[in-house]
Length: 137
Image 1: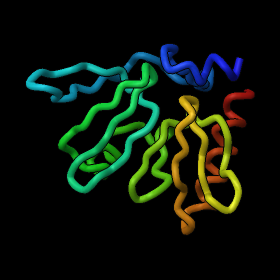
Image 2 (image 1 turned 90 degrees about the vertical axis):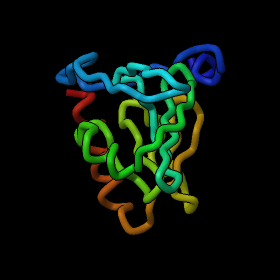
Image 3 (image 1 turned 45 degrees about the vertical axis):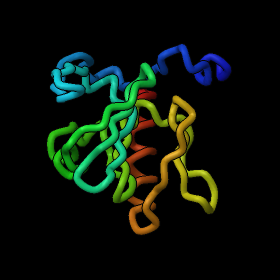
């Protein structure tokens, strides 16, 4: 199954708790002189770059949006999205491996590795454990 998740043509699959209501929230993204509607469930992670944010989706698309990461942090569901670093927010449904070694990285379903803040390590670890416990219940 791991080989399928690394296939660049296959969308990555999330793991959400049974209580999570999928498909209830969409966001409009201004992209290439038009507006693209994206289900929040399809966002794997966001990467801040000054006043811009790269938004990555499960179908392996990357959007450059002229909004700060802080703006996204205020609007996204805090039960599913977690700010793990000053420049990264992840969708917990797409995290495949917890904090890896001294490098403090999370492995995402699409193979991407995301840095974890040293200061917030315990909080992030606790949130990941809580999320995984909810998956099992």
